[in-house]
Length: 494
Image (cartoon, rainbow, N blue to C red; front, side):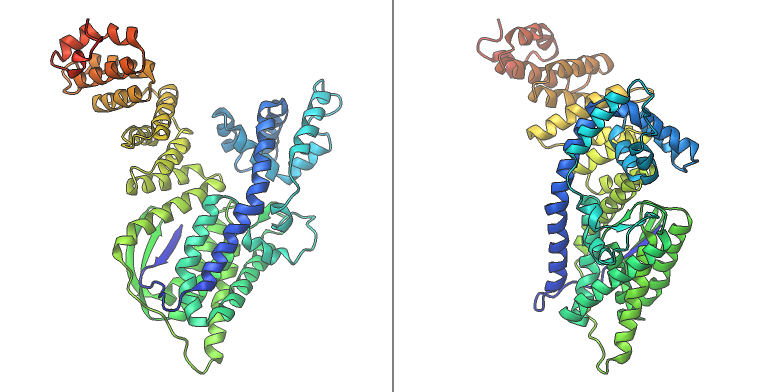
């Protein structure tokens, strides 16, 4: 895995890259408009599915079908089933068109099965909840019996599979797009962007024909911009951030050298068998973009203006963070959870107080409850400093999950116990707050925060009207912290 991000240019607002901004807005409008509406309806249907008899009737036969057909990810399906990830399995099952045909033909739950009537009724209700297709209608169809729809070569470039997929593509669209737009002019830039997306779709359609699934996303058109960028800058030395597997660094190199590196990466990823990402669409975009830019530079008498302006180095951490998040979401979409885990870990190191990142890291790490990532993600969550109700609730939920799933058992340091006990007391989670205090008292009886923690717990219980509960702790509080101001609370110390 290899990617590189240019760092030596930024937009000039004397001539703003409005077409790039417009393309970003269109992509966002499509995703958060009709696609999100469709997704919301699908989520309601999925919610019904998960509480209906259908998972028990359909998911085990689906996993057995994966085994019988020798699917390369069959072992992963068993792992997801063991972890209870039925929603992931539902989405996966619905993407397997061959199995779906068997399902609708009555071959999975045949009429002879005792549960056939129950399955038929639940299946009919589930399908009635499904919205009219939008994404599937306008995405590029790779199935063997796909109809001839050239319009999808273009429309597919404005669709995205998830928020992470969209944001990752939009970051790269902006990073490469503004430089190319300023060099080509808005009209030619738009034409080349669309042609690059079509070129990406054509190569992907040829490479994945008959393999099943759908192609969508702006990454092919964005790859065309990357090809244009490399040819535009040619041998001019440009500073890049790059990542090669788990190694990343900065390098200053001729821009044109990155074009074969990008192409080789897409070919390598394709040959390694990656099906969650359309690497051939990326390669098609690179070839189309590089060819269009080379042709333009050959026929133009006046050289194209190459915009170069210094970039602020204090934005580098943001760029690195966004790159890790985008890659993690992309890998998760391709069911490459172990690789996604490494990307979430790297993002959390850059933003240790970012709750969504920690939540994604923790959720992914649950698939390996005995792994170090699960313990590390939990510790980071427990160290969150924000005091809002959502953060406290998130910490408490994560704490319960961690205690339940951690293997061979939870690892809580005394400082973490004290921190969580005080926070759970503020959140009125009395049982877990008291449980943590008792564990702290037992494992670290001389801990400097022991008395303060108990004092905060007693005060919180008293002010919440839990008078008997608070009074029960008074003897121990007098022993641990005889000077605690809580003991001077009117009505408490009797």
